[in-house]
Amino acid sequence: MIVDEEIDQGFYRLSHQLSHQCFDFNQLRKTLGEILTGQLGAADGDERKVLFDRYVTAQDGPLACDRIIDVIEKITVSAQKLPRPCYNNQLTGRSLANARRLIRRLESYFPGLHTPREFHRHRYPGISRDELQRRITRFQHVLGDKTELKADQIFDQVFCISPLPHRH
Image (cartoon, rainbow, N blue to C red; front, side):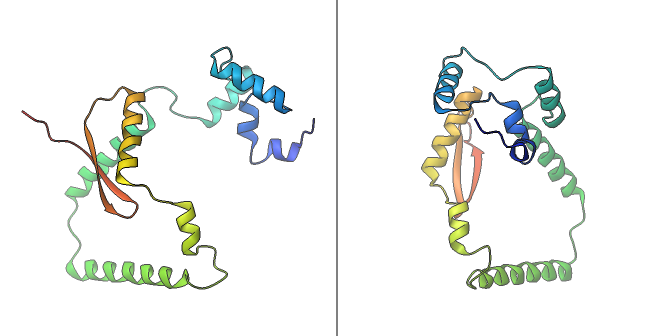
């Protein structure tokens, strides 16, 4: 058994201290089997509870996705009350955004930069509309949500997910 304090107390601190510890393959297999059959639950203990409570917020109440939607709706409502920028500011903003986009695209062709196109394709491989629809359905099944949703592709990796209109 090898324990590395630098790893255990560094970047992986939470995952290591909140998990069941396994020091060989047989122990890992046994622990996973017990978790999957329901014989073993989350790792417990007072120290773990204190650590979990310190780093994980909103453990009760609405799901994170529901909280995010609430914030977006508030922003949307308040943004509708704001006056639109004058035409010159809109034009300047669009021009600067297009210039930044062009610079980023050109930089991706230069060797040595950390964000070449292949890196982004690996990091964000994309998804088909049908696969996204399957994943949405899976999430809905887990959450018990019966809302009929559709996914429309807007750009390569951008979709608009909206409810289907009610049929009368």
